[in-house]
Each structure stands twice: as structure tokens, then as C-alpha cells.
Image (cartoon, rainbow, N blue to C red; front, top):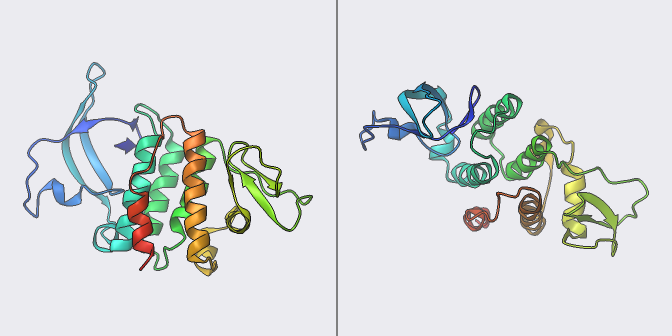
Length: 219
């Protein structure tokens, strides 16, 4: 779990059951919880004494599209944030973003916006396109910069999806729903952003839930 006070910590909770009033019913990807814990410095696994829902996000459980996005983003975070990493500013961003995902009606582009915003906190937010770039350009993953066609020395996001990336950069969340992206470009940009994270986050080797998320957006 990633907590505001202690960062990422491994916890265990005794007495889980399948009853409706069991803590199991509120333990789902990206749920925002209130914990009472016994924190012992000499223990690698900390015990949760009590757990409750801190901010209700039941749309993430009941809405299949939002659930798929939550599972995908939860995996990205789980594989990217190392144990004991502590960042209150990152926590505040995550809590706010999770509530936005739960409450907004149009979430087709949410995961793209989220990953770009997350890259700020990890230190590899893409540089905006230079005015010197031509009308058609690519995005080089290693350097995190836009280049003219043919200027990339390694893996890159190609022209159409790179144009979408440039448009999303710096976009406020409330403008996201007005962004029109073809399913082809959305898929290409998503793959490109996953590869971008894999290059820049040493602990992130793969994202297994990517295929499930793509399937959901095909319908």
C-alpha cells in the first residue's frame, strides 16, 4: 500500500472473509482507505488493526471500464513505486486523480493523462515540442523529446500518436473530455507511454493488464 504518512509499506490484515461487511469488500485496486496500523521499525511486514473506506470510490468497482483503468494504473504504480518510497506530494496527486476517475463520466483518455502527469513526479515528464520542429514529428522515448521525422536514434512514438501526445501535454483535466482521439492513436499512444515508462523506471519490466485494458476499449 502507498500511504501519505509512511510511503509504500507492506501490510497484512487478519480475519478476511467473503461477508459483505468484511474489509475484503473495500479492498480493490485504487481504493482510498483509512488505516489504523501497528508500525514496528524492526518488522518488514506491518499489521493493519482496522481499515475503513476513507474516500468512497465505488464506481471503480462497479463500472467495468473504470475498473479496467484502475487495474491497469494500479499495476503501473505497484511496479514503479519501490517499498519505503515516501512522497506526500505524489500521494496527494494520486488521491485527487483517483477521485476524478471515480466521478467523471468520460474516461477514455484518463489513463493517458494520468501517466503523463505521473511522469512529472518520477522526473521524466516529456519536453514540449520545439517551435523549430516541422509540421510532422516523432517522440523519442529515450530522450523524452520531440524530433523531426527520421531524427530518432532509438524507440519512438510515430507521427499521428506523437501529435496527440503534444496536445495532451499540459492539458488541464477539465479539458480532457473534449479531446477527440481515434482508437488507433489512443492504442498507439498507450503502448508508447508504457514503453516510455519501462525505459525510465528500472523496476517496471512489463504491464500485464495492458491487454485487458485494450480489450475493454474495443467495445
